[in-house]
Length: 256
Image (cartoon, rainbow, N blue to C red; front, side, top):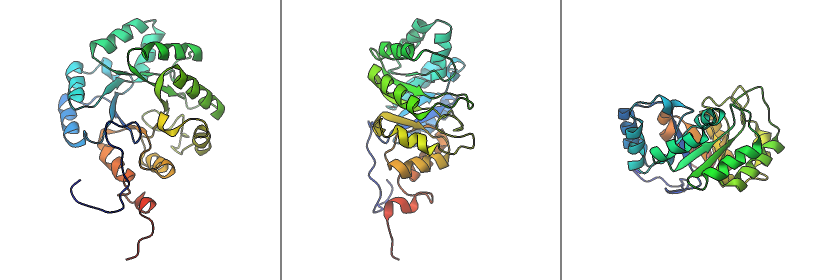
């Protein structure tokens, strides 16, 4: 850091499994990736190439190599996994992971209907070769999944080999964990936490108010994802109590 401040929360250090930040790349250019990494590589733990944007991205191999050379793993959005699966091309999907030397993969079923046992089979198969993150929750705002079902699916997916389970929110933060207004479904989150260890969950929280809510609930080292590249350092200030939203949360009472 550039100077010393007392009473700053202790952040875990990379490589970390808690305090984990996933950034969503929705189509950055090579130059944009270079600029992003120049200023942010210390704070980002993994990058997701959002949904199926990698299908259209120019110079994909070069882009992935830039991230890897900076020590930042990359994975492809779960929607792309679903696009392969619904076309009966799971083996082709595995070849894509191998072609681009991707050591992480996301398994989801937010856009298609899939038997949950089958989803767990995909997780088990992929986990033999790569680190799997699996996403729970629907991208359909009208589809409300009860808390017990979230817990049941998360437990089974972790047992199948998922490294972390992801709480669905999409890039806008208006489905899954959140109401269409962006408000956190607080009861859902709190009930999930009664059964699933917080370090095994990656909460998608693209909106600032959502990030603040999770940091206040679970502390500076909560796992958060779907963070926009330009919002990474702002998120880090939220984690450290250096933004107005969490300024008083970590420091206690100050007498001036």
